[in-house]
Image 1 (cartoon, helix red, strand yellow):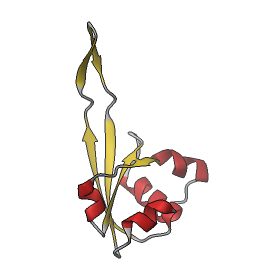
Image 2 (cartoon, helix red, strand yellow; image 1 turned 135 degrees about the horizontal axis):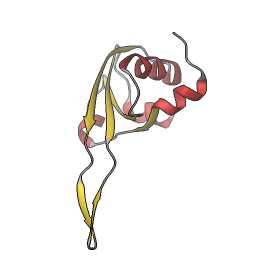
Image 3 (cartoon, helix red, strand yellow; image 1 turned 135 degrees about the vertical axis):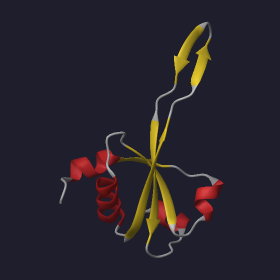
Image 4 (cartoon, one colour; image 1 turned 180 degrees about the vertical axis):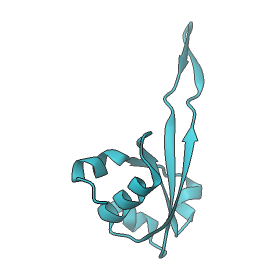
Length: 97
């Protein structure tokens, strides 16, 4: 299964960097497209970042309900992918690429 480059760039929105995720050497967390599957996420990470992916876990995070002045509002839902890597990487160097 080979996807076109445009679809690969659409799947991964942004890295989700926190102190906890940066401390892990064999795991990276990405915000991904809500319709992306585990197989698509794995292929996108392997092709775009040239690493070997061992596992992919996905979390659907519901958007918070907020008040904006006198109006009820809701933040967008986010899908996060926890990508386990086969080999340890230097996180700062990886994100610089």
